[in-house]
Length: 213
Image (tube, rainbow, N blue to C red; front, side, top):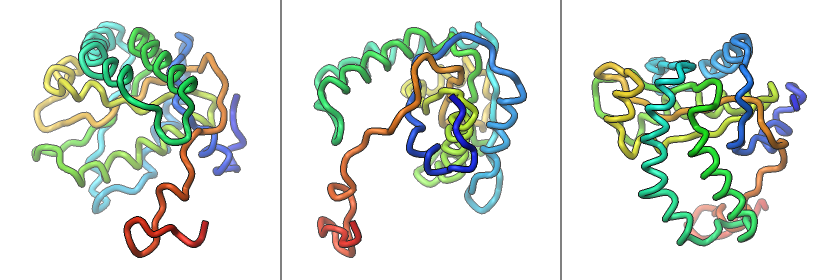
């Protein structure tokens, strides 16, 4: 379901993680629109060190999926099994989210297109480097939603960064920051579930409620 491209708030409020994707091909024209939205984003010093890999090769995707699956088995799955639901999420909904995460894990390589968001920089990644790539990632997620395509921001491959980036064929001095699996969603877009602003927004002093809510 495509969104009204003029209603940015409707797009924002319905861009939820879509982890169940159809294997149907996605036209290059739509991927190009998503990429163009990405490079409209702000980035540190306007240096434009971002680089984007469009991955369609099944062998590359499968090699990374094996790493992604191992990280689920060893880290992410056990964490889901022992953690409480986040604010604004019921236990039942959290279990559905866990099931969707596991589904994506098993079908990660079957998403028809991946966009790998990278930064070309000889220096190791640091806390502020994300300012030069994650705004682009969010723009691409919103653009995908506007076009009726599903995606989600994934970074789990970074738990074994060197092996994953070797599987992706990234050269020295290029680091990946996210992989966006993109495809037509099996489910429906809907409202994003989050906690109350009153629980997370402060004014002037940490812990002091923001009076504007």
